Image (cartoon, rainbow, N blue to C red; front, top):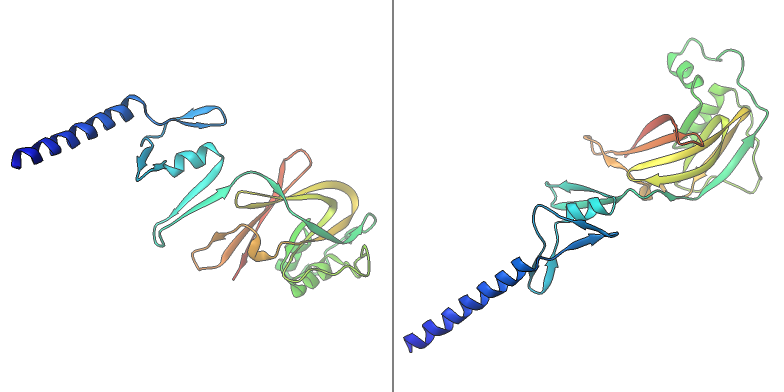
Length: 226
């Protein structure tokens, strides 16, 4: 009986050795868009499933990978640029800034006046921007259009907004320069659906990058939301 068990064990060991040899001789290949990917840890078949190092595969597909060790979460973020919808609230080709800032004695408002790109997170913030710039009344596209609930406002001076996209963890606003006027739009996806990073204080950190039609970065604005 003991001899019989020894024969069975020897047969199993031999089978495993042959199987391992077969996999070594014919390793699993990863091919992404026609390119062979060679990760530092080779793919393996475990319990009938093929296990592949996720970082290597994600990198080949153009996806950012972030490991959250505290919560045991692997975060994947697509870096493919995709368009998002926006609603044009107001637009002007004629308005111009006043010769001098109306609030020269307040550094905060003076700096605000000198900007040409704004991300507005609420009505009070919008009123502050418009008052500082001297916009008495917005030239609305239509009286029936209102800012969607939970949306973000994008206000540009001396340029019109021609497109808004998301790429990775950034919101990108493409603008077309113009001699005068302004543009005011609302991003329709609510704040919760836009990409963000966690700040050290637990707030959501949104990054908005303004670019011209050639893709040149003009400025970027980081907004913190609870």
